[in-house]
Image (cartoon, rainbow, N blue to C red; front, top):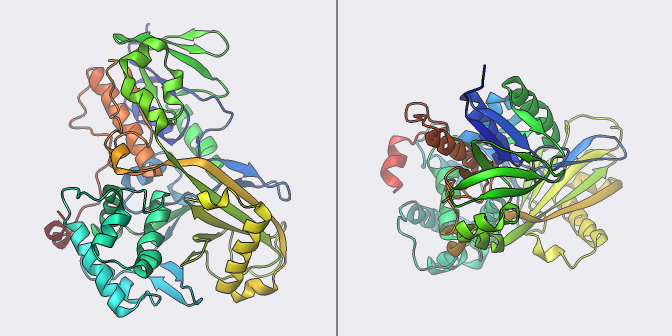
Length: 472
């Protein structure tokens, strides 16, 4: 008996491609996924620590409570229990004083933030009031003003440099992976409204307790196999062949051709145009131009000490080169640990590090850790490694935001997925999963399926009565 299911090829085994493949297979499509590398996960990868043989993520990835689609994706593949839920965020001020950010569980959103803001000791009362007023205006900001960046908007709103450095940049540079002088106001508003103001649990952070390589290569791959997705690892697509009338086939690097009914292109924005043949590029000049979209680097400094340097599993350092610090393993244990105690320092928008030697970067980061955590001053640094992804995220400028393509294309059976497509989200794991699910919805609609009563994209967190009234 012939298989009458829609046949779909997904090109790219990153989070966008994996989420598209999962959604399509769950709804009865015959899906094959093509990944040029051995491992799944795309830019969210891992390396092996030679001293211990453990898989270590190149850079720590986290989700927030507002990331409803990413969290639902983890539930569907059985990996949700491998996420640690963090409800209290720890900030270390410039003088080393610790502040714990924990919103009220009784006040409605967004008033629940008032208690948390009050605990930020590195901000004065006047500064907290000024920031609160700007946040209230941001929540009511419907139309985009003439400001080219959120940095420009903040200065227009009278936010002084100290407040920008100690609050706005702390949140936005980490969330967007980009400097506030480059990021759009719309992207910043998304972070603060959806990530903090709209719902009480939106701010909560979810940290993977297993390497991303295990999450994608074990949990996701196993689930995809269970529902019939054929995963072709180390199988590079050389070219997508077709015309404006439709894609004809995939030309693989080994010289073979594969034909499907529908095709989902789920690779980074810089690679997508290169996989299209000349006729398809001519049909999609807008996509070709996206290869010029600017990117921002993110660096991670991995350090192994001979002892625990802090009882905290994470911390945010204010006014330092180091931004987020994550302790891997159970940092509260006493005694020795084979290979040492591993800490990872994440530095987003790390362009300034390009001209610096790794030894200098490590020395600076270590000095900042010693200033924040007194126990680090007596600890021996066993080894260190600096990892930088120069094209970690696309830069969410106002101009490029408007150019992000939808998941459908002028070519009837070709669809796009990736955090760089139009999802309403910045370059995050949530944006990647949403893009894959939106692409899956588009494929199903093209195949004649009605997804109106069975939507793939998970809804946002529900807003409380006060948030619905205050946020436009």
